[in-house]
Length: 530
Image 1 (cartoon, rainbow, N blue to C red):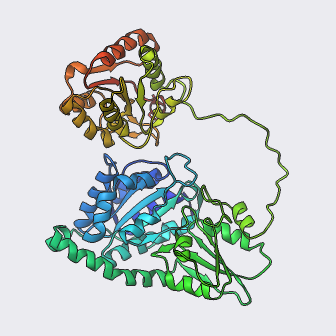
Image 2: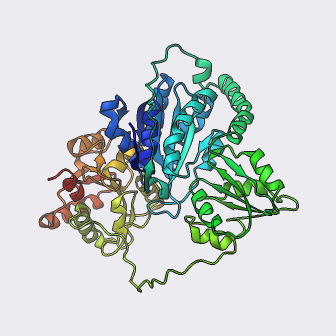
Image 3: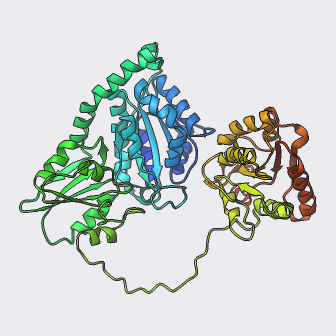
C-alpha cells in the first residue's frame, strides 16, 4: 500500500497492527477507543483477521490472551475505565507473559468528554510493570505497532499502547509501509510453569518479571520514539509526553531563549534521559496529557536538590482536563494571543435523548408509575439512557460504573429502600449486569430491574449487542428470575397506560422482577437504512 492515507489516530493504530502481522482483535466498544477495532474489522475479511466484539473488556482481554498463547499476534481494545474491568487478567498476564505479540490499546479520556473519570492508564502499565507506548501523532501510532509486537515477543510481556481522545479522533496523513508482515504460525507445545499461575510457578514468574525491569528501562532510553535535545546555554528543560509533545513544540517555536527538550513516548520512564536533562537544567517543566506521572516520579517525596520541577503538581499547568497550547504558553511565561472573536453568551444545552428514542417513552411510563412512591430510588447505568437523569424525566439518582445499577439496587433494598429500581441497557446487562442479577434472583431481593432493550450498543456507534429480544428474555429466566415476573413493554405513546400498569404491578411485588421494554434504537434503524 503506497502513498499517503488520511486516518484517525485510532485507524492509524489499527492499520499499523494489521501491517505488523495481526491475527485477531478483541475488545468492547467504548469512546474514544472504538474506531481501532472497527477499522481492523473493516479489513478483517480480506486480511484473514478475527474481529468479533467481546461481551466485556475482561472477556476480550482473556480471549486475546488465548490467541497470544497460541502464538498469534493480537490486539485488545478498550477505553480507560474498561481496563478496570479487565484488571484481573491484565495484572496476571504480566507474569504469564505472552506467546505471540500482545498489544493492549487503551484510550484515555482527559476532560471526561464521555467518561466517568479521566484516569491515566500509564499508571496501570507501571503497576503491572510492563512497557507502554504513547504516540504523539498518527504516524507514530502506525509506526509503533511493529515495535510493540516485537518488544512484546522479545521481552515476553504484554505491551500497552495509550491513546487519548484528541489523538484518537483527529485525522492526519500517514505514510504506510510497503512491507506488510505475514501472520505468525500456530504455536505448538506447552509450558505449565509459565502459563499456570499456581503459587510455586507464580513466585518464579514474578521474580523473572522484576529481573526484566532494567532491560525494559534500557530499551526505553534507547528507543527511537524517545529523544533528548540539549541546547547550549539553556537553563530551562522541557519534558513532554505523548500528544503533549505537539503543544510543547508549538510553543517552543515562539520561545525566545534556548531550551533543552525531552520527548517521551515509550515507557518505563527513561531514567537516564531524565537524569541528563535534569543535570543541565535549573528548572524543568513537565507537560503531560493526563496525570502527572513523570512529574511526580521526578519529585519523589522531597524533589531534586538544587532543581525546580514544575507542571501540574505546582499549578503551572492545570491539575485536571486536557492539555493545550494556551496552558503551555502560560506555564512558560508567554502571553496567550487574543483571537479577536467574541463568543456570544449562549445558554448551555446539556445532551439529551434523541428525538424518537424508545427510552423516552419508557421513562414517561416509569415517572407516572413511581409517582405513588416518593421515596423511590433509581439506580442508572452506563449508556445513552443515563441521560434520563436530566429533566423532564429525572430517572436516575445514582450512576457509577457498568452493571452497578443492579448491584447497588440490591444493597439499597437490603438497607430498607423501597422501591429500589435498576435501569440498565441490554448491552450493559450482558457486560456486567448478569452476575448481580444471579445473586438477586437467588435471594429474591426486593428490586425491580428495567433492562432497556434497544437491540444494539447505541452509545458507541450501533454495534451489535450480544442478546436482544427472546434471547435476552431467556437469559434473564435462566439466571433464576421467575418468569411470572419477567414483563415485556412496547414503549410507544399509544401503550403508555398499559405500560404504567405493568410497571406499577411489578413495583408492588416484593421480590426480584425484571421489566424489558423492547424497541429498536432509532439511530440504529437509520444506520441500517430502515
